[in-house]
Length: 406
Ligand code: PMP
Image (cartoon, rainbow, N blue to C red; front, side, top):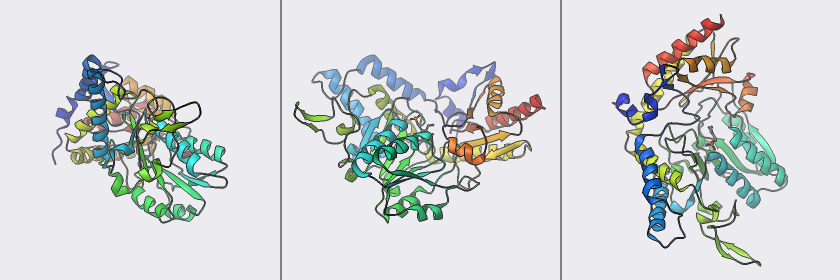
């Protein structure tokens, strides 16, 4: 395997700057990854010469923009191996996508006394929408527990699945721990009882190839900005058998068939779920990000990134004051840690002075913080453009933080 990381880095203009007088070390990829030049240029070309509102226009620009937008949808379909392009719905991001599923599936299929299974390691975006649905529908959120390493306890999950379970909401990869969950097996277990599974794929699609048909996911939701595309783009993939039966999430222009004051009927998929003018440039940018990923050896990229994670884990584990939070056997990208007696925000601030961007906080996963009884963690998260040298700089800077507070 050869992965020419220096050459890849040339594609990402943002990486070549200095921050606080030091070369930027960008290790906040789980929050937002950076965009390569082809994505930036594609969006700029669209804005400069192709912009027009889509789907309704008969004029040249509108038709051109529509073709570009729908081509991006086709790219999404192939990227996740969806069986049907019309089951790939554009949304603003993962949060909006999960809200769509929770609200619409909830209205269609969840009632009094039903249960929604949600794992203990979910991002707030995959907890709160389900809580709201549960409240509205008279249902209950039931938590799939995890062990000390930050791995879901699958036997417990299987025990919790029952006739009242109406959906399972599960992250593919945890943003606070890095755990890769065994979603394929967990989906198969739910399907034995006819229960659909909504996979939060925000942290998996940037890190390894995915296949919604192989996983047999009922819903699969992700954001463009974590996979080298723009903010304002995201996808809900859903199986047609569910999407066709679910009511619209938002209503208004573009998603209707016929409107009268007496009665409105809705457009077929995907339009039914795409009310109003979408983020057209963002959707096209997401398509460009997929083109970019397809142009890489994504398996080699994932391998390179995994080596970085392992090396960083090794380096930080060697520092006695450091505790690594999340030590699952299967992990991707994320290294969460604490340092004895030093608040993660102080770690983040001192690292920033060294030009190193990490995240400090609860990572929108307060139940995970409660589980480990910490207020917050420091989190380094890697992408395929990070280097071994950057891991060295991180480890050295962490050592420096400890010396500052000694
Ligand atoms: N789920 C997970 C696992 C995430 O990491 C994030 C973003 N941190 C989200 C959902 C929400 O994504 P967005 O903010 O792009 O809507």
